[in-house]
Image (spheres, rainbow, N blue to C red):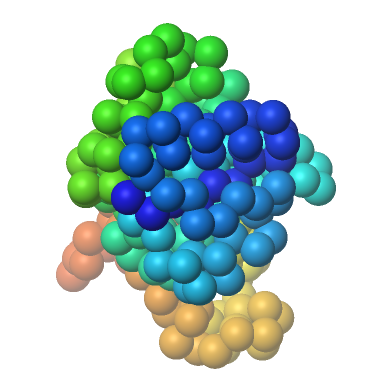
Length: 213
């Protein structure tokens, strides 16, 4: 198994690399931040990417955002997230893209080296490895989450402009995007708010009412 690691702690980064090497796996690249991850994956074509959530420069969620971007742009790339905590928003987005080839383990709960390596191999093979604590927190979030909370920042911006009475043409001009992009955002908004096509109801009005409510 060929692996790329993105972990800002040099001790942990080197420790994971040596551990994997002991089990016969090859770390083809080890990064201290998430900025070069995309290029590294293109260059090395790894079987698995292991990365931390908190990475430079802000040490908040750069790693997990990089994982989401990687899965979006290079679908099917196996990703194993290692973290000290559950970053619910991006973890949810990551898993909503599909759980095949995805893992999310909490560092402090990795108690057995062999189990960790087996989890990494499972993810690389297209399986799933999720810490029960991660699953539990995401379930709580999903039960509490309102449909509006599922909108992306750009979708929320589009809906806000709709609430101001802006037309699609005006929204496109204000956001400096194409009409097609606006229409795509609005279709996604309707889907996330569970507003199917109807001959008797105006979906645009209903979406705005939910936003204002």
